[in-house]
Length: 294
Image (cartoon, rainbow, N blue to C red; front, top):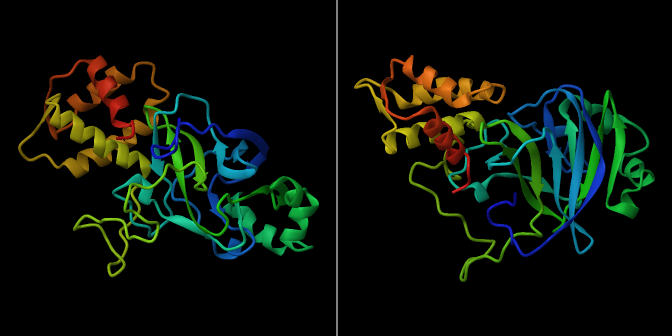
C-alpha cells in the first residue's frame, strides 16, 4: 500500500538490501555517518529477530527503505515517533531524522556504539561492502548489523512510518525519501510551515509526549463507535481512559480467533460503556475502517 500522498502512477523497483539483525528489537533510523552516536530509537519496539530490508528505487536513487517485520494485509500507516516528539495532526507532518551525508540506515540501538567504534571508519567499511557501487550496504555491528542506503533527495529530513494491519499489528517500518511524493498543491512550497491546530505544540511550546501507535488506533476506534452509535457511553465515562484500556486489548487481538466477538465481550465488561448496539461483525468492520488512512 502506498503512502497517501505518493504518486500512484510511479512504479518503483525493489531490491533486497540485506537482513537486519535486531538483538533487542529497539530500532534506530538515522544518518549513520553523522548522527549514529546520538540517534534516538523509536518508542515502538518489535520482537528481537532477523528481518529483511527492502529499498524502493526510482531512476537509480533510493525512494524509500522498508523493514519488513511480519506478513499480513497492510491497512494503515502510523507515524514512527521518538521520545519527546509531538504526535502530528497530519501524517505527512511526521517528524523526520536529519541527513547531512546523503545516507540513512536501520540498526538496533544496542549496536550503534559498536558500529561507531569499529575500525576502519564506518564509511570505509560500508564502501568495502559495496555502498559506493550499489547505493546500499550491510556491515556487522556488535551482536547485530547495520544496513545503510542512500537517501533519494540527498540531505534533508526524512520521516518514518509503521505499516499496520486492521488489528494494529506492526507489519513494517518505512522511511520515505521523497522521490514518490506527488506535487504540492498550487501555491504551496516546501519552506512553508504546516498549518497547526490551536492546541498543537509549535516551536515556542514544549513538545508533547509521543502517542503510541496502538493508542492512536484505540482513540480513533472509540470515536467511531460513539459517532456511529454502535455503543453508548455511561454518564461518567472517560473516553481517554477507555481508549487507553482498549489499546491493551488491541495489541492481542491479532492472535484471537474471533476478534469481533472478543471486542464485544470486552466492551460489555467496561464500566465506561452503558450499551453495545453493534454486532460482532459490525465491530470488526469498524475496527478495520478505523485503521485506514483518511
